[in-house]
Image (cartoon, rainbow, N blue to C red; front, side, top):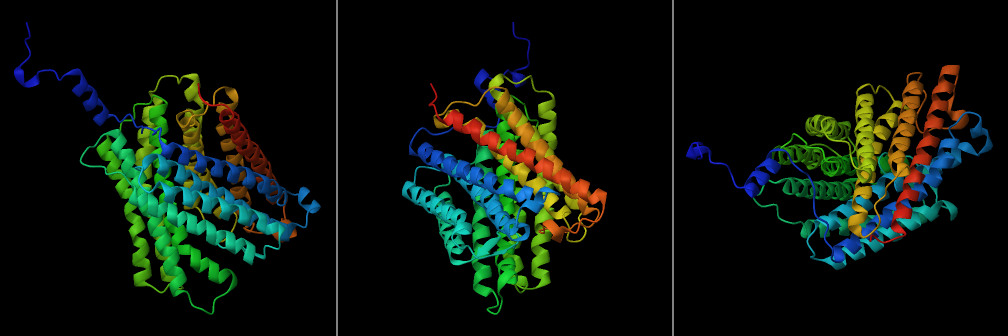
Length: 473
């Protein structure tokens, strides 16, 4: 006989399951089996090719800053050219391509032709930028966010890539699925992806706005620095939102029960997005070339993402701590998630102690950017079988994110060490002016870590290519 009070009659099994998901999100999204999957595969190929190209350039980039070895190269000139192409392939093209992969999976089937045209334009633009150093690419301009070779071949490639990225964002906005009033885990992830598209749209608006109001007398670095400053800051909100989506998705794939309800996760995504709307205010309130305009973007980026990132990271830490041992197929995902969280935390901590213009600045953004990169690498591993490929398994796939993360950690610690002695950023060889054994040791650690990270990045490409050679059974 049932002795329970009628007011506490047990819920049916299906409703109990839904209630549990609403309290402890099992964060995941389905992958469609229609044309959207083929488009996502195309973006994945572009991301992989960009990573391989970036790795090839980074070999010479790291060697050009490693004491002893740097004497073998025409260092200063080649360092700057390699740095431009390395940064643009590893940050701009890689991130846009993987955003395209996730947005294609997430979008409705509308305007598929726009998606294919965006992929074609981005691929052509990336190829032109990669070839520019070998066909008279122009002077290297080390502007923040998007460094350039100030010559027709590279700038043509950048414009074509920008046109493809604009078409990608417009299509993703138009084909974004409605979230509705449901607050399940999938709805929270969809909101996060929608928010990342909105942030990208604000970034494109900022790039166009800067171009329209730039003082016409500017040239060289001053011109490109102001042109890319506002939009570059806004793009960081896009990458941060994609990282948070990837963290929650990977945690769910690893079997972790994240103590973060979908309602709270959705609110944190909204909080991470909110600060991006400071971007148009900065243009309305201050002249684009003013210090106040520049500082307002910096302030918004520093304070905008932190209040959302920390609660998600703490919830993930608790969820992973209580998770069972992952199955062999899930070990690479867990390794990528832990490495991503570690590197992003290290980069954020370093940012607190930045003073002056030295190599602590690249240490900060290398940590944060690599944190995002590792999260997206984990998402590639997770999505490979859902895109029709083999799942990456085995020790090599698990070792790869740990190797890449460890190398990058050594790299940024070497930069922090050297930055404490005032070693300047964006210089190489004799221009570094390494005066003491400690400065040389710090930069040597940076070089060794960079080489280890390069090996980890190329290993990722090999693992993915091996999985992509054969279709899933």
